[in-house]
Amino acid sequence: MANQSWFKNLAYIAVLFFLFPLIPGLIEGMKKLYLRNFDTRTAVGVVPIKGTIYDSSSYVKQLNTFFKDQDIKAILLKMECPGGASGASQTVFNEILTLKKEHSKPVIAWVENMCASGGYYIAIAADHIVSSPSAIIGSIGVYSPFLFQLKDFLEYHKIKYAPVQAGYYKSATNPLQERTPEQTAMLQSLLDDTYNQFITDVAQQRKLPIENQKEWADGKIFTGKQALALGLIDTIGAHAEVVNAIKQKAMIEKDIRWVHPPVKGGLFASLSGEQKDTDDTSMVSHYVHQICSVLESRYGQQLIQ
Image 1 (cartoon, one colour):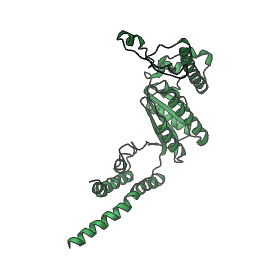
Image 2: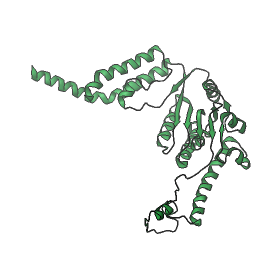
Image 3: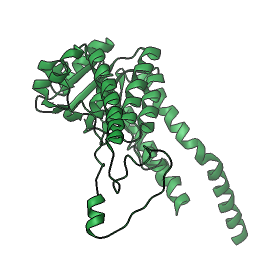
Image 4: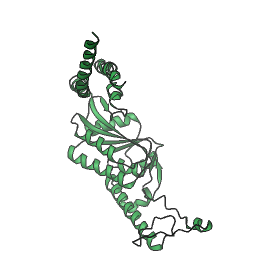
């Protein structure tokens, strides 16, 4: 009897081992089947642009997923960004423009609190920008914040520093060496070129005269109300205004179903329903998520113990 029980458990584990990888696909298929046949709302993808931007990869991946999903009719960029690296911000900006050409989906940017510098670079790729009246907008400029000069500190403490280099400009950013006028000029030219790219894209996307860039750029920051007067955004408002803008741009007549990126936390987080739409309250959807929870509690816990 003990051997039979052991073999039964082994067979049970083997079946679960082969079936478990299929569960996420099964659940996703059930959810898509329900949404396509029973949910009358129109899907809009939500991409949060949050925090300082140093890496574009996650944003690019999510944007591609939403743009290529035929069920999603528009994209909302939920901006909460003080800026970031110019290269990463510019990459996301260019990716949005490319995807819009390929898939013809409107993009709306929504700013509640802050959309500055690299964050604003991304936002101008949108077809419409909505902001709260007191949000921080702008900071259109470029700077390099970590160019310390510590040569005098070394000399004061009688510390000798004798690096070896090849290439006159190689040490231009070395804080332990005094920067020459030529090196400073090279660094300034880098910032100037990046800045010119930035303001050129802003002027083109926002249809602003570039000769007036000192009014709306030059590193200045503005409230949403001030930004509206300058043409940096399109509308002052809150969530209702965002919904109106999306419906108008995407020609949506039905209610909107907000589609969010997968919740971080692994497979069990998505199976347990944490990935569900924030406004999904229908009875059928409730049962779908209940099934997910049962599958996790029935199979998942046994596998992770």
